[in-house]
Length: 168
Image (cartoon, rainbow, N blue to C red; front, side):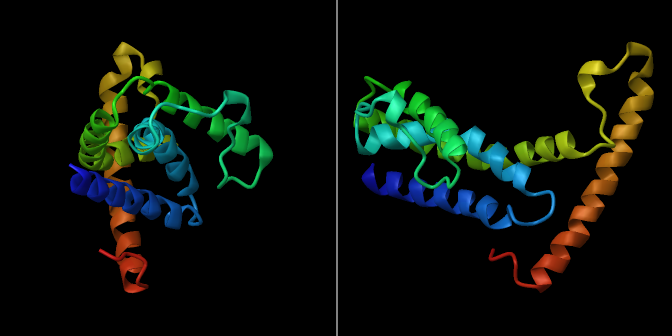
């Protein structure tokens, strides 16, 4: 179990590093923020598996990686709440859940990335404001917008691979 847990931690770090490295590229910082928000529960499981029940008062919890005091407090607050939700969970159960969540995240990540790209693409209208009579028109506009973005992403990735920006 410990070996699987360490492999899952390594996988989580590699997934996060990919977003961390790419956040300096134009339009990619938002994906790092969304990835962080998606993985706060993972962070709580990790802390529960390594440390056990939370032992830090909420008011004193800051994210040490963050340079801004405000963002350090906000991220620290979210991490504190994620860890606090795991209170009472045994370390072995937390390790097991962490492993499962990392596997789930790895499988869901391509779909999540597409959703995040749709959210950031101004050509993709928000489905919640569609009118019933416009559904066919909007669906076609979405289809065309996604095809154009995927082609643009493919060309961009080829250029980045030539520059050695992808280590896979």
